[in-house]
Image (cartoon, rainbow, N blue to C red; front, side, top):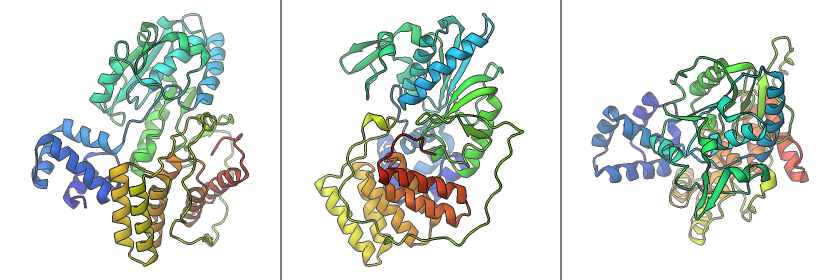
Length: 419
């Protein structure tokens, strides 16, 4: 298990949720960092973290993996093309387009933003994109994308292909895409733009899920201050809940995860009176179901769930048996080892959520189920568990949104935005 003193240091020094480092999965990440430094004593590693910002950054990066790819959630970029075209037509001839990608990971997102702006008709010399990330390694990869290939996960839009050159291992970006982008190595929670003018568009996707509630609130307020009054905010499918995007409203276009400011004059519907929580009739321990199939590109570019290997499947079966016997701590440790060794899978994340729920630890259960629906957005059981937890917390509107998503999943519908 992870050193409790290290967890306390992580809470004090980072905006990330400390439970991301808890359990066997977190302990494995720490051991890997210690091995990379040649450190064997946990106390020595804590001391290193206290004085070495680069190592603290490396640990944060290992916890919050900067997963990204070109034109992630294709509907969001198709919507952005049209929106930018209208903005260009309504602005003075010398107006500049300012956009922010934070965090930008290894650069695929800001490059996609630049390609979209160029396709919408904006001249390259009038486009400004700030791409910010706390990982120096990710920034280095992004800056080298004109000479080193970046992998392509899904087909690019036809209109964007001419802006990239295919090479073995992926694509290389053209100079026209890189020229408008300024890559910045910084923590978005404390970074201040060199130019105080507001951004027309901000991408902050699948980032909030890693933050503590306090850091989430602080980040959305910072974004709100940096965004133009009539600007757009893009988040990820794991981020777009009412608490995260408070003060914004969805644009109403499926799969875009795009938000605009909520007008001050719009009247917010009153909160319904609290009702007794309704528990699902299904057992708390995750059912022994077949692995869910890989997702198709029509689901907004969501991550393909990991299918467990034979060894992992056997370990998870053992973990379920332990949970059925009431040996919850052992079940959780075994499932967390599966995540650490073979990566997250829907089966492992669901089991961990159910175990924490059985222990009465709703915050931990919620986090595991959030990670589950981040990995597999249409996971019906995960959505229903999140609905139940939201009800227990008094968030009846959030519970209804999760139930609606689950209903669409069970009915096979996919034409509506998942809110």
